[in-house]
Image (cartoon, rainbow, N blue to C red; front, side):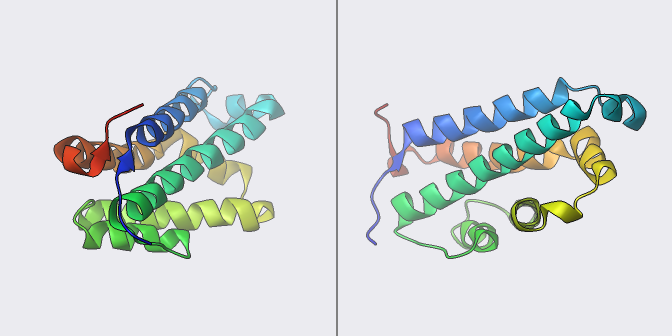
Length: 152
């Protein structure tokens, strides 16, 4: 795989998707667990939006590695390490990325083990991890226009 240019359109699309999904989660009644679970649709909405935001973040990382650096990864957890190796993410955000990738894998493969309480805790107090990693990637993209195909 040879490096080329990172698509500005793909970056913008994935970052917008992440923001959209987080806003959807934040619109749910997250003030307390009882209110959150009164309507079961809140649980399914939270799960879907959280999983989709994580998928978009993983897709963004893979796109940057493949298109900008000609680097392929076989597992989502590897993305964070390679982004750190290339100085796209710092060590703290790389660790967060790996944790988020692991959680995405749990959501997809071990969905039956995720409790409603766990989902509520993540949605009510840990969304900033996704926002922080996405923000770090966005700052890198903005600081390195030479890697980006600016056409939409």
